[in-house]
Image (cartoon, rainbow, N blue to C red):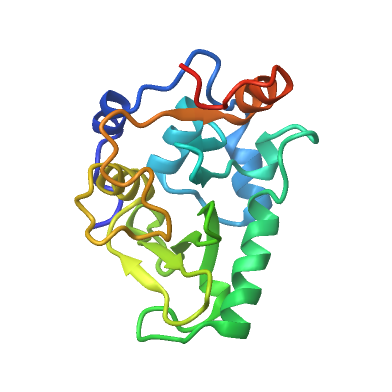
Length: 194
């Protein structure tokens, strides 16, 4: 069942750096979106925030928690893109029937879009959907965001669920919050500098 996975395993595998995380009023966010977000996602955003893993997989924070200078497109823009992509090039399946069921929470550097399949009232049970960059049938993983990231990073999902394998099976994956990544870029440093 999606959502039952504990974030502690991910925290041990990939500790967030100092200054990571987003804060804000989740009630305002959820009112703006019209639903409650999965608990593992809210915990991830609170601890890690919006940013990238190994510079190849990104996790988006809700636009309502981020300042105007945060990287774009935000979660709303990515959701609109994912829905458009599914309508244009996607293949409906027994599980993913229409674009409105998709809410994007991330992506890959190879243009895969990571979403939830928002079916049912229990957000913690929403599975992860990967929309490939070339369209086709979406792939559904019966697990929440945190479990998906953990199992991708430890290569327990085989083959790699996205088009880039740099983070797949990574022994010491690194997460870089968008503010730190921007600062390192300004300082002409590799975003993954330890």
